[in-house]
Image (cartoon, rainbow, N blue to C red; front, side):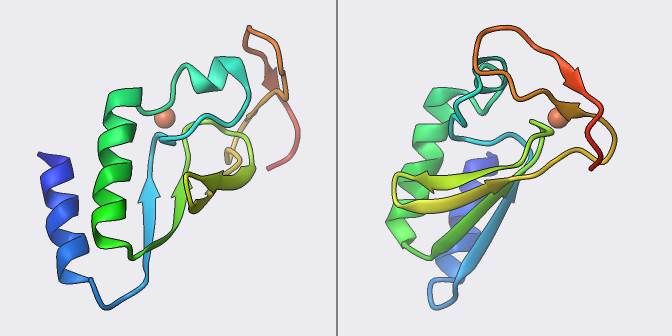
Length: 103
Ligand SMILES: [Fe+2]
């Protein structure tokens, strides 16, 4: 249902550059505990196909992970943002810790 809504929005904005803001990042960011809580892989694949169909998504911004990260997800640049309270610790091995770094 939400993907159908997005598809309609992207179709209507075909001549415009689109910035897409999501809660759960669709892409892994390389931190195991946070990658487990990203958008489900099947849903992420469907989202990516939808973005490719219209070709107007210029950037994806996501939250949820409380950790700044950026990169390129299958041709679309992305940013995840820090939390406004606690941060997820920068932990490259399984397991989750909170960090009290300032936002
Ligand atoms: Fe969340």
